[in-house]
Amino acid sequence: MMLNWLEKATFTSADLSGGSNGGLLSPDQLKQFLRIAIDESVLLKEANNVTSMATKFEVPRISFADRILRAGSVVVQGDRLASGQRVKPATGLVTLSTVLLKGEVPIADEVFEDQVEQDSLADSIMTMIAEAVGRDVEEFVIKSDTARIGGEDEYLDQTDGLIKNLQSGLPAAQKVDAAAFTSYDELFSEMIEALPHRYRRDYSALRFWIPVIHKDGYQRELAGRGTPLGDSAMTEGMRTKLAFRGIPVVEVPLMSGVSLINTASVDYSQFAALVHPMNSYVGWHRRIRIERWRDPRDGATSFLPTCRVDTKQADPELGVLAFDIAL
Image (cartoon, rainbow, N blue to C red):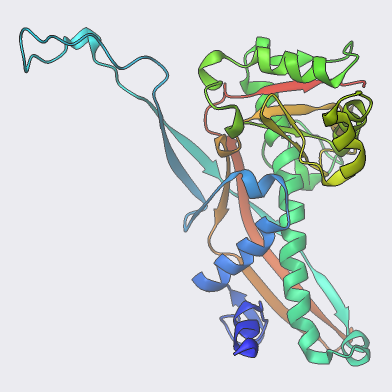
């Protein structure tokens, strides 16, 4: 029975549709592939992942930003509200236009021969590819910017990701210049104050997405306090689940590194975002393909993953972006 469970949990190359060389993933394999890819990431795990058979598709959104209740009449029973008192929900469509992402992973024949797993090593590689795709898509979702010009990372210039969407979509008051801030208490407080009140009904549903360097800095700041919270931050170390005013503080390792965008240098470790994770849509085209191809001339077997992805913010005004953090 245990062997049967393990077999069902394994993402195997032999089971790929299209024969032993692979091809399009079946619906069940697609679910398993996405589960592995998403679970191995941080941001994708909390975001709103949607799939479609179309490369370009629309996802509806609906919300009630204003009061819908009015004073009712007990004198004239059954009397409906006047037309001016009826409130329509704010509706709209989020358009996701997925772009093509491809990879090629060649493995020499000798690698299969020398490993204890031998041919079953291909199954391990399949799982590792799914994990790597999740990591790479998360970077794509965070850093993509169509303002990049030739030679400035073609992988990240096909759409606009989280940082660019917040930069271009948020009102000016919700973009916080943190260059002069001297503490994480000040940083997080200012970000909360910049978030419109209508989005602050449930703090536990919000997230601070921050670079690792600032998660470590916030933990050190807490540890320096002569309080039980400071003692916990010191003794529990990295295992401590950090929060600020009830909002989880989540480190996103891929919010790091320096990139060129239209000749300007961008340091992603200087950003922090206050968001509702489900407002971040990540759209996947269902026709994910993984092919296995052996070329005897090279003496290697190549694994070729192909997928289509896009990302958008459902409500462009839900969130706060802090920039130029110098803590």
